[in-house]
Image 1 (spheres, rainbow over the protein chains, first blue to last red):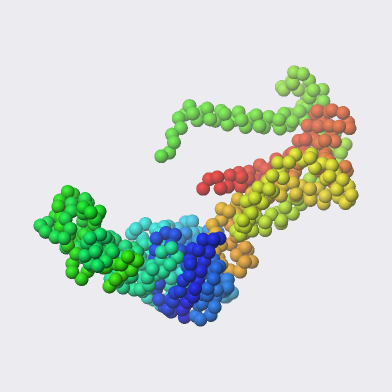
Image 2 (cartoon, rainbow over the protein chains, first blue to last red):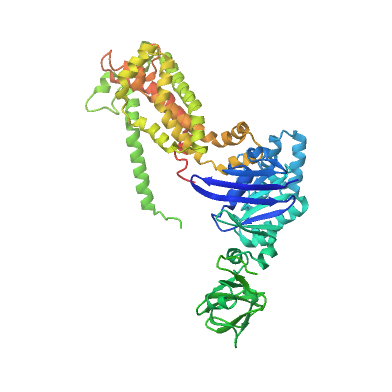
Length: 333
Length: 276
């Protein structure tokens, strides 16, 4: 079981309220991703759940038990850190065995568990090495190994992939998702990378300045962003946001259109502009268009689009695909 | 980009390095050479090198006239004793300053260091009287306490800088892995800090061994260490340069040997944090 509930949780550093007041429910077995710009309080929130920071108010309960004042060691949670935080003076075997040793398990049982975890994570031939002799990806696997052997109630990941190169990050993303499908244990994952959030999460929590902006499934957030912030933050390239007369015409303060919901034409359309950059990815082409009065807008064309720098282009939003936001930034739909 | 060094530059740097090394070592070398001359040869002007009468007689005389082993053991007990006591106090102190710093931790550290800026002679009279009244005068325990207090700021500072280099996330990982505070210290922190603790210990033993002001002032016979042993050859028996040099050589030899064998550790300790 790994149900985690936060009620009126606050965190202040001196006079600064990093997390003003927050409620959140994380169900057993869910893969929850905290996402937001740097400094939004997502890592602090994770550390509060872990017990590495004390709350300034509110209650954190794990499986219905009030864990607010429990030390980290008693919470039965495992954490994977951004810096891996392996014990440099211990071999891989001893690193993975450490939590079991702390739990007082006997040596034979520890060996069996370590061998099992090493097999799952392809670390068997590295067991006698020190962390310093491993690559970044291998170190990250050791950190995950150390987390899984103790069968925690939930896994906490603090930006675990940000030290890895792009290719490795993609692989590890898959491995962690597969791990979740196998273990079916609650996972809380902190990232500033919205692609990681979209691809891995059952539920995304978008944070800004310690507030929860929206909670929902990845596609929920993508298709129905609750406000301008979420609309701009989720999706890559980001949503085009337009204010002024065009927004007024839709009875809104701001309207938003995703790049793939803009029809591209060379003859006629709603907004005329000139292509500043055409990014060709093979499968898609992203056109960055300078539209007078609206700044730069991004449109996505399928496959190869025969337009390049300086060409005139017309962009038209597809009907029913325009998001409308009010003066308070909230979605009007 | 790697910086290229020409052969000429290399020769110049090497020359200067040797020159500086020799200048620093010269007094020690001179002492050792003088200890091997006769008294007449030692005071000859201009100084004699090749034509000097070389002899080991001074060492025999010094050994016969004084109780070298007693001074030696006093030095060993006082320097190791003050170091161990200092570490016992400094480790927890540096620990808390590095990992659970308070608002005033920096001020506290600066204040501790500022005590080193005071000339020792400034507290000579109160210390002397204090030692006399409490019966600590001319006792090993008295000197252990005095030297421990003198060097404590340096020990705390060195350990503090060392502990600061240990990433906090590793300690947090240990906490998440279910380690109690005791186990966190025992299995994670201490093994990672051992090089730092060892180099701090070595430096402190050397400082305590070489300390002369308090060891000479606060002892007469029973607790007198090697610094007092050297001093005893300069004052009461007139100036015998060769014998004084032999006594000095005998006093510095043990710590020189310890320093030589542990230089790797010492250099690592003193430059820790400067290079990654």
